[in-house]
Length: 385
Ligand code: PMP
Image 1 (cartoon, rainbow, N blue to C red):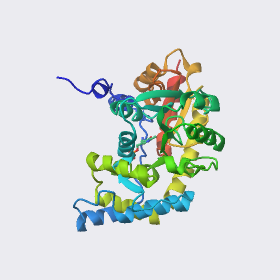
Image 2: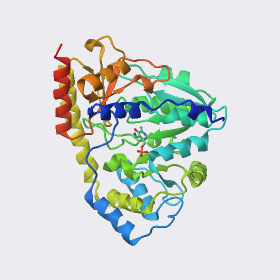
Image 3: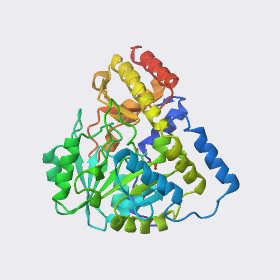
């Protein structure tokens, strides 16, 4: 039997491994990043109504018109971006499908793609499956800054795609205007298309503003922007995402989409259209709550000896474990879940080279009582010996 080596050779993801360990040991799971409270009731009611009354047959392939218009209006209202709902916005089954569609749309065998590491785990296998050659641009702790030198070295006339994840999972970086401008300069000197994974666009802390990459001079024409209703509304199980970009690029992305999922369930689509129109207070409140959670967790972890790094956005904070023993990150997390009853995610799997391996990622998109319990357990664990 032969299989595609990219997928046949994939290990179980670190998220699945750590969640299985967390379940086995009844640990508090601050590993996998999903909220533990569902998003707005009015959205769930709107979706339930559609389930009962229809439509329940194949929706339009590009997405329900109401949702496409709501997505275009959201981009205009929030970021001043203008996209035509008919030809430049595509609804996908989560941002994960949007990543699949865009990577397959722009990469051919032998093309170069630049991934900025630490990188979300979906990107590399999909790029490799498309036959691409992956060039890593590895950021360095503790500030994880994009520098002009590193950008110039990584992005060349051979680069076909650059994948930017801003705000960044796993390290919570919100890239500065200067860094984004440096990236735009490097992209301008190449022939590359930019896939901007902006699923955490609403979750930026301390009054930082999210800057859409496509809003930078000259970038609209060569950027596709990915969003996720799951992240905006704490409805990650709904699997509603989107891509927007110039028509010429979107035509190709849409051609991939029609053979990957063709469409996304209509009830969820109309629930999200309701949310983007009537529930935009929700992500503002969520962002404030998450910022408080970040502060609470950061302070607690610092007191225990973790070297907490700045977390500027997303669901996540990262912390150095150097002062807490000799373990590498993976062994540290395995021991912490088994002996301390708290699950986190080692950072090394987010780097193709496997280092640095002295940081761990905690998710704080959880109720305060859950974070309190996690800190109480860690206090008992780290102070016992
Ligand atoms: N991109 C990033 C950076 C993510 O963290 C995630 C979810 N963990 C996704 C994309 C996928 O989002 P969705 O759940 O909408 O598929």
